[in-house]
Image 1 (cartoon, rainbow, N blue to C red):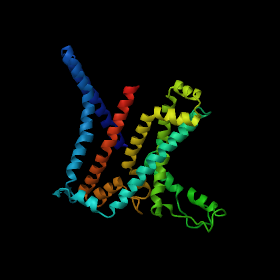
Image 2 (cartoon, rainbow, N blue to C red):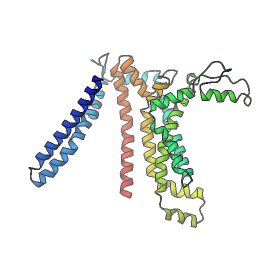
Image 3 (cartoon, rainbow, N blue to C red):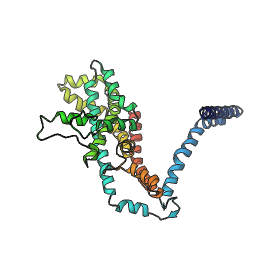
Length: 330
């Protein structure tokens, strides 16, 4: 109890000290002439955010790049680009790259298509808000929580004579009269390479809600006069959707694709919670964790993190550029 009170006291004192410092600096700017005063006041409010950005993002990123050229348990032995060379030549890296490719293509394409389809089907229907809330609900669950939920879905009980804990295995047994042969419970997370796709399904479940909400808002923002003009010209609803709606929401599609791609490239939680990267389900982020903290090679883990960081940068740039163009055209 004393530890909890001590923690709360520390947090309260820290917050109070921050506001007191900002208030004192702001008061000091009032003594300056009008021109310098406005610039100084801007830095008073922007400065703390920039400082946190530098301390929490820029410095760790530069240090990670620096460590990627070293090896050993404490990353103290300089090896140049050896970590990157090993990364390219290591045979089991092909499995990691293959899995990341499956994740990238599967999650990004399927969640985007499902989100767009659901947004279109629920647009204007009765109970639209409730339907979208239920579809978006997985986004409120942490990826670790989602992984644990789906681990129960895939749970395996060897004896088929008893009810299965795992929903998928129970449904698999129910299909026994329909499918040829005997349908015994399966250890789905151990079947390679299909276990990777079972993990991908979890991320699709989560990301579809995100895509649906964004697409739904974008579809509602399409100018009604454009839709009516297309219908008057004799276009079918299918032609209106693909010829008018899709081009109108293209910036949103780009945002969904890039945001989902970034989330998929750094996926870690689902894999860690469900398989730990075992049974050929390894991905780059989990491999980075294993090499850095379990195998005592932080230099190689830093190299993996650097590659992941460099892969995300152009996608972030595309996302920012798309939002800027959309804002300019609005």
